[in-house]
Length: 85
Image (tube, rainbow, N blue to C red; front, side):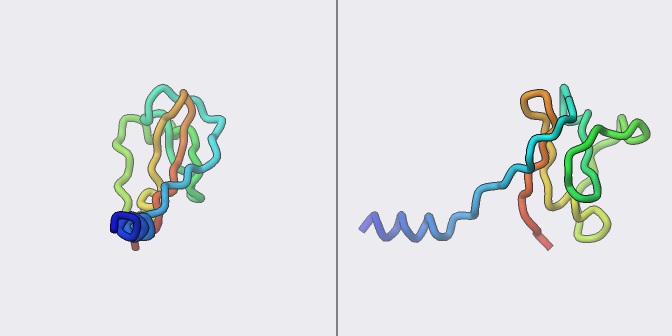
């Protein structure tokens, strides 16, 4: 009885997040990172420093909705979390 339930749960589970290839952009915190228009991690532009990361929406900030930005092992990493629009 538990095998069919486990199978159903595994089929219904969301696929794991797919990390974007690690970038060469060094960071100490996520505040040092930014996303390009294509969703690739880049160094945060000087004019954007001190501001909060944009919240994703289905309009002009779609790339921020689809990707999660983080600083892992001292490099910027963008993880594709899917399209919610």
